[in-house]
Image 1 (cartoon, rainbow, N blue to C red):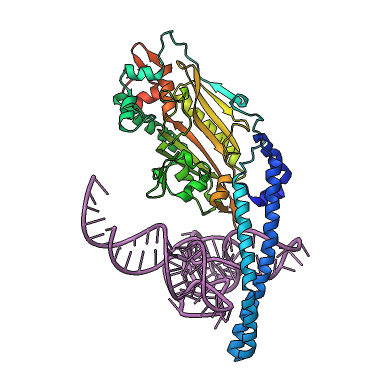
Image 2 (image 1 turned 180 degrees about the vertical axis):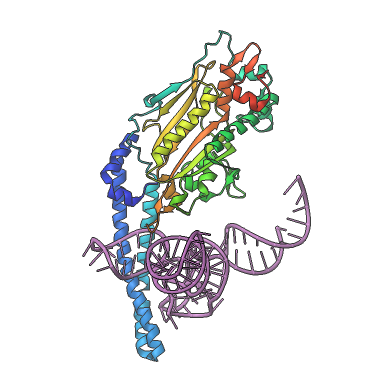
Length: 423
RNA sequence: GGUGAGGUGGGUGAGUGGCUGAAACCAGCAGUUUGCUAAACUGCCGUACGGGAAACUGUACCGGGGGUUCGAAUCCCCCCCUCACCGCCA
């Protein structure tokens, strides 16, 4: 969430930036300031009363010690009489703080100045594209048919043991995924990211920290008995490593990577988009996360984009990079780049990575701060990106590289797999 | 699942009703001194929200929430978490 102090000091700017999300920013922001004004006033009154009460209590102590019982008794009863009033004021301050918090939770992150204006996917700005879209023969198959033809994925077996959206990978396809894990993690560690194996379930506080809660609990699988959530992305555990921490400025940036399965309920998204590997409840992903100094975060965002682009190039897939417009960006992001690869038999672009700068939006929620010398602690910036999400990469590789001998793997993956063709 | 112990500032760790926002030590910052990377000494050193141009100052916070009291880190109740041992088990 945005900091109320920042909103107060940069009111016009925040409203202007938020307008890119096509919401009534002015009303939201003015309301926040209005609640905060009331909060300040209530706190001021409450503090003054508490100060008086503290003073009286101290006096009682001194008088008692001096043996002046009668006077102590008089002051004690005065102090006792203040209790109700103090309680009421404290109640009021708490209530206003909660109200402000609730209100701020509803305000999305303010888009960065480079974010294009727009309402939906059609307004995203194409930054650049690369690779070559293959020209496939007329009888080219979509990946779900290739999966059956070469006995690579069993969708029905997944339905049997779990349900739709949980495919079972077999033989060379299973091996290919293990290879992909190694290839991607190697790429990331070579770029300076430290590899982690985090837990796949997180507690409620972590869900709040990265912004899945309170609004999007419907998207996560919840283990009620233990009050834990299955992670929708490893961004959640990785970023929450630093919740409630004050880092040293010289330790920034912190670069992390992890391979994990990701679990998403995808409630309400049924239809043709979910065919084959396009949208799953469980999928594998390698993630990169950075905790950055605010002055460096946009430079780092570009570096992360270059890094992901380099990986996709090595996989030989035709891709395009989009800068998302204000209407298409996630709630917590200040600027997002999406990577899409072209899946030539489906004849459509598939999102395989999303790289975002959250600025201090997540950091504010999770109190992730850093300290520079004797300066006061400041909120750090958080960034993350997929490098990469597996299923759609697999779909594109299968469709684009289909030959009469099977699916020809890109050379980098051949090294990791020990074979050339999926067949 | 059973039993026991415990949750205090960046870390270790004292503190059982007012003189404690909290000893001491370590780490960190600033300085002094000695013939080098080093040591010794001195001072500073929690966070948040208010007020103030600033110096400074008010309030809150010792896992979370309630209660007792003029006054709570300290006493009482509930909850959460961690650790140890036992049981079960990969």
